[in-house]
Length: 224
Image 1 (spheres, one colour):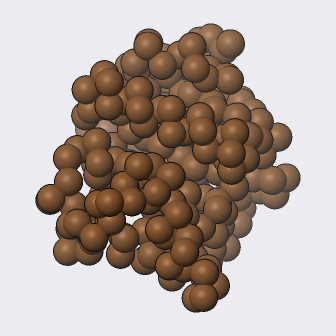
Image 2: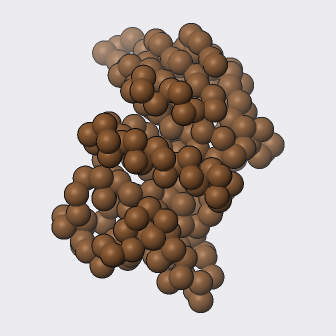
Image 3: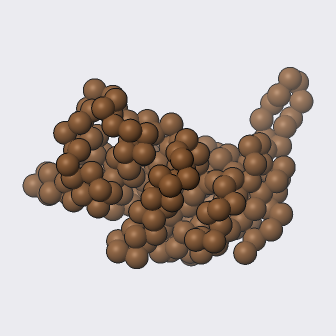
């Protein structure tokens, strides 16, 4: 397994009481597969993804990434892990508005330490893979919502991370555009041996996943 979570709990102080967002999660993420964390708003799926992606710490439990505990890892090590071995696609897209699509992708290659001589070729190849070869010199405001999300995917995969985390990547898209985005993910798994962990509440996407964990009130209620 590329990721193993053991007994993950996460609490937050809310109005003088302790709110448990996660109540003891155990799961495994297999390499080269699409794993979906399914649940309604407030189920804990985004909190769980943030912990799996080393963006947050659990209150209790442990996460192993490629066999190594990231829970006890110093922040410098976690930062390096995120920069080199992980890619992120956020619901809000989070592109740099003053950078072109190409510059947004090339920038992630710079900070991940990708070889300088290969950056242009790799950035262009990733944008071509998501169908934006002809739009790479446009700024995000000049692109549609679906095109911006595809730029975000190209940026996430550019440095060849071991795992891509996608938090509700289709939530703001129409059904047809959302299915196009998911097809890109499936193609990445087949063609680039990507591993993808995605959160969603869209029941229409369950059939294309290799593994689904259903969450409710901070617990896994079903898996298939």
